Image (cartoon, rainbow, N blue to C red):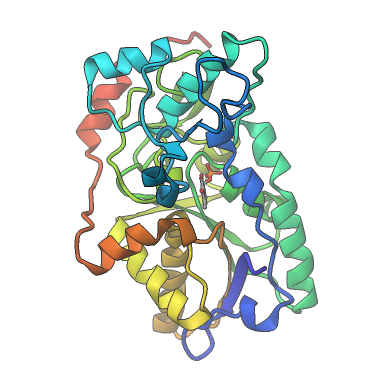
Length: 342
Ligand SMILES: Cc1ncc(COP(=O)(O)O)c(C=O)c1O
């Protein structure tokens, strides 16, 4: 299964991984869905939850299942965290930060429940580096080394997965650029402040230093559900702070446009999250063309979009809207950061 593609920009953009086969990296669907598995037992042993009921709070993982009743995406009234948020905003459609808050509370109040984070924390980032290590081996087989490595960024594990092994190369003197692509509606890396904050909305988890829009950030309902998060992993944040990696932000319509271009040339429908990496790869390729340079671009196609076809329908119907998160809103949220003496 092709997950990561590299394209050489000789004579225009080509998505090469699918064609060569050698440079592809296997997808990790189980890891990608981890934030929504946060309640651990998926409702099976909780007496308050009906058999088979599974809450997808805030994540846009499986919209097709939502109308069937097999899953719900919402802020629930089953936790103090959820009830508090609904008291302030009865129409809250959830966010990753809210989902984490509810899941942590659920796990903390049930003996039979364990909670495991899917992104953001450094050990999760390190765990994912198998993607980059494998990509390095496959690039070797293809006789190439990337000039640019790109991945989309929500909480940071996906980007870290492919980029961190190349960061090591870079620290050892190799020339390589590492680019994290995020939505301009949730721009934690490009507009967030490098400060101590909670990893989720209600503030129960440890405080970490990260690029943050503020834990009270409420993201707009864009279609890249997995990127609707207010913070960034401490490792990614530090690398950005130290200038070892770069970040770019894109509005969702431009990302869908790039995803459709990719799909038409590769026959793979990408997840809306992954479309941000594709948009960055397309831009890098066009820039190289404009400069008359040849450039090897490696990017991580983190998931397929088969459960997000409704989003593509909306894109083709011209119903998608772009949203630029305002800097003033970030400044307002900074007043609510926890005070940390260092
Ligand atoms: C398909 C896909 N790609 C990327 C991401 C972003 O992952 P991360 O939080 O590791 O940045 C997600 C998040 O759920 C996702 O579903």
